[in-house]
Amino acid sequence: MSDGPAEPGTRPPPPPYQPPPGTPPYQPPPYQPPPGGAVPYRAVPPGVAYPWPVPPPGGDGEPRQRLHPLSPLLHGAKSLVVVIAGLSWSTLSRVGFGWFAAMVAVLALGATVLSVISWYNTGYHVVGRELRVHEGLLWRRTRAIPLERLQAVEVVRPLLAQLTGLAELRLEVVGGGKTEAPLAYLGVADATRLRERLLALADRAAQPPTPGLATSTTVEGTTPPPAAPGRPLHAVRNQSLLVSQLLTPQAFLLPFGLAFVVLQFLSADSWSFVAVASTLTAMAGVLLQPVRRVLDDWNFRLARDGGTLRVHNGLLETRAQTVPLDRVQTVRATWPLLWRVNGWLRLRLEVAGYSVAEADDRNRPDRLLPVGDLPTATMIVAEVLPGVRLDALTLSPPPPRTRWLHPLGRGALGAGLYERVFVTRSGLLTRQLSIVPYARIQSVRVVQGPVQRRLGLATVHADTAGGAGAAAQDRDLTEAWALAAELTTRARTARKST
Image (cartoon, rainbow, N blue to C red):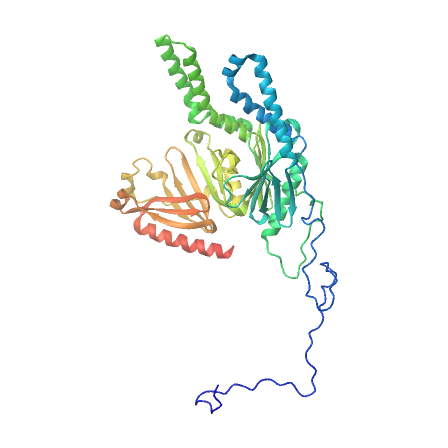
């Protein structure tokens, strides 16, 4: 650095600070632990760096819990059914009944022993804001499920579990491809308490702590009191459920198909075992879906508990589902053709975070109303989406030139923007109304097919997280771009306000 004069237009740096003569050197004050002794500390000799806090006794918080002792028997019973089905009747005819029974007994005993060993190595406990599940027979595995990602906890009671007084706990998390960490099996009271505790901890983990306010904690080894059962909203009559499934195309057309097959048999004079078995198998396949819906939605009850919906349903397999309202992406109302005589419709939900990769959709909490009239559906939709009246939604139709694409169903199409939701309508024989809150819209797309380009039309898609969203079909091209821009603006504003 030069000692010459400073350049014109610049200021020289200030001289370094010099303490006054006789001032003692600065000494930092000794460390003082927090008042109240909130965190235990080790005694540290002078001159040694301060260590980390001592972990709580036990290391992992509360002790690890095991499943119900009858769990191996239920798993062994399931394995027995699989074993018998795998051996088939051909094995019985070759080896005889005695050897067949011995083979079944040995395999069932082995499956039960493996289930007992697996039960002994399976456990769960709550550590802070995580649910840890330990399992595995040959390869041990520990899964840590953050409770802030927990969407819903479902209590399921299959038929064997009902007979033994047990229940299965199923967890759904954000982004899960399947149900996470099914705890099978627990006592009904234990499963209910654990579900209430996990939901309470998940809600507390999702809310940021408020400065200056003390947050409640759970004493180790105890569970919080169960929440209130909720305010009942609606209970579906089983008679209406049966009649609604008899008015499905499968059940309605089954007598005509059966009469046609019988006439073919009579004319051909062929009543072979293969022909009869094939006919019965085809009939069972046709009736499988309506029968399964009746069994799944039997004694359907809906209740509101704060910010969640509680759904109870099932005959052979009872379910108690908890659906958080802040995760609802879309509400769909469907009017099947044969139901319109009675003025019936059904309501379905799309919930973020639920597994969609499973082929069987029975595990998804999409049932909001299996069957009901318009006033009941209006009341339920108002509970899920405040300020939205299902019976007062008027939608604008597409332009008249869409008759070239929909000569019979142009009147069934429509779209509309409301204060909080985007609504679309579609379907000719089965009418469907889709309601999407603006805050749940993830992306907006404008799509044109080759015929739409010739007619100057386009379809506007409002996509949601993990769902189909809603689509305004065959709108005028200028209107479609204006609608897409308006949806984008309203979605951005709604997300900022939530």
